[in-house]
Length: 207
Image 1 (spheres, rainbow, N blue to C red):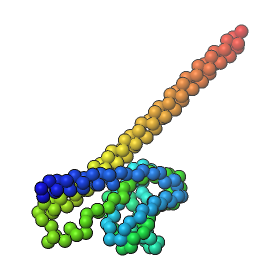
Image 2 (image 1 turned 45 degrees about the vertical axis):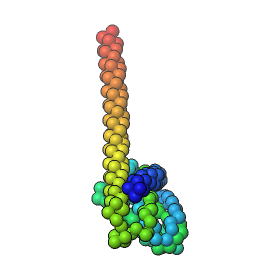
Image 3 (image 1 turned 180 degrees about the vertical axis):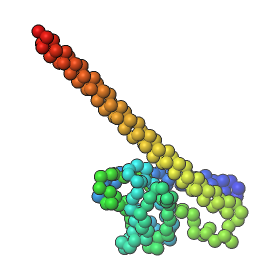
């Protein structure tokens, strides 16, 4: 019976974790800041994963504020050197806010995706001495799942970024090819027009 209860608990953890891992994607326009608020109970651990998937140097200013307006996390994120992963424990219950600032960009909008999940484990099972081996395995599985999901999302976002770069490069190649073709056609028409005019002028002089 205990074994069945543990299996049910593992399934519940999986369901809760998947249900709270939906990502939100937004576009932050140049010289703009986008903020999102989330009510968090005191003592609950929040996990925030974010990534800039399109726009300029993939940079954005990220800040997290507590219910009193104090900054608890602030960083100028560059995709080439940072993971875009953070966590914090709510000291007070209230609305916590995350802001993505793109004011440093004059012309380029940034497309950002992020998730905000929680550690839903019961506080009665936090201390290691109160856990039996099965409960410890369950918590280990949960942490491993969180890490795997984060890495999978990171790989998917990076693939999307590379695909966007490839499509943008392809569009530029197509535009440049069309421009070259138009230039060649224009030069050919101009040469034909010049040669015809030159021969017509020669014929007129002979007459």
